[in-house]
Amino acid sequence: MIRMNRLIVCLFYAVLLGVFAGTAVAADSCDKYLWRTVHVTNIDVTKTTPMVQELRREVQRVLDAGPLGPLRLSYADLPYEAYWIYYERGRIITTLAWAYPHLSDPQQDAVLVHVRGLLADPVHAPWTPGIKGKTDGAARALHGQQVTEGRYPNAKDCPTLHVLYGLWLYGHRTNDWETIRSCWPKIKQYYVQSGDAIFLYGQMSAHIAVARLARRFGDTDAQAVAIQRLAKDLEDGKSIDHIENRQKKIRFKAFYDDRNKSRFKGQPWMFLDVSPELCRFIEDNLKDRAIDKIEQIKSVYPLWWLHQAPYFTRWTGDEGIGVSPELFGMVYPIERWVKKTSPDNLALYMRSMPTGIGDCYWLEGLAQTIEAFGTVRWDTLTDSTMIAEDL
Image 1 (cartoon, rainbow, N blue to C red):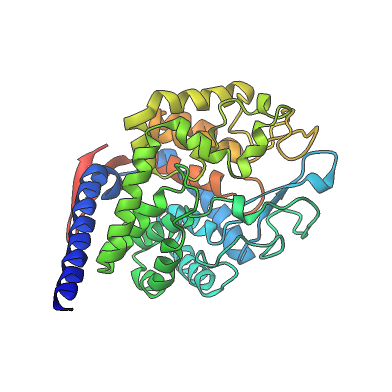
Image 2: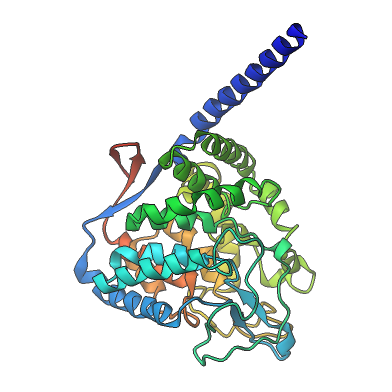
């Protein structure tokens, strides 16, 4: 019996040492993306004032509307083929976090209230399983009517883990860490239970967010899990074909149909919701392939930045005319963070306007364009200081 107990103890410590050894290796392999984040100073006020004013107007619409429902798009001749986006719980938190430094003082106060309200409401809290229903929140369409006709995506086919990056970004940019700390047990539980979810590049930022939150809150076990998951996904992510095979298993598979695929060359859905950190990884490991995918879809939609451009497409239904904000959401991050498009050219892409209230992809692009006119650095996150490194 004593020998058996000793054997169990030895096995326990062997496993424990293996876990920590694996974690150390994983940490070394992804530190550049895990502990470094974008920091911006000295923004050119002259060039950005009109964009800041526009950002404030659009954010005010979000604050006035209250919790938002999904965005319904119907540009085809059959209303029941409508297309829905922004169904992820808590998705708008990422957008508000990006916008926060550029808002007026009253708006910043209102953002804190708004986000705390979302986190207190199970319908909108990011850790609630599934996606929002068609009427779970205010209508995003400018006409203000709740229209429910149209197919709705299957929650199992919808990648949603990227919303966790928004929680870290919110804490980082607002310093409202106590709000996030109070939610940490729910965030951690939701993340740990998501082990079988399909991760594209956009969702890999969830690992970064959880590792950073765990480190801030002193949760070494959760930090180790997140680092190991990140290391595995980054290794898998070195093959863009491997990630594309993942996206074929979820809601994007419809765009590969014979009648659809010619309208979606490159199939760059994997870049939706991608963070600057993951764009840095993409630049380091598959820059040419990523840019090629973006250039392919731009060859079909050269005015990719113009929302609802009247291109023929089956995006929102058969025989439909017009594109979804997802086109902007796929192309802009690669232009900004991988191709390193100049701030002046990025500003030209903002000559369009958002689709409805709280158009996340467009508003995040606007905030990042404003910041492109500043001194942009990668800062190393430590427990007590931030060590700056030129971008």
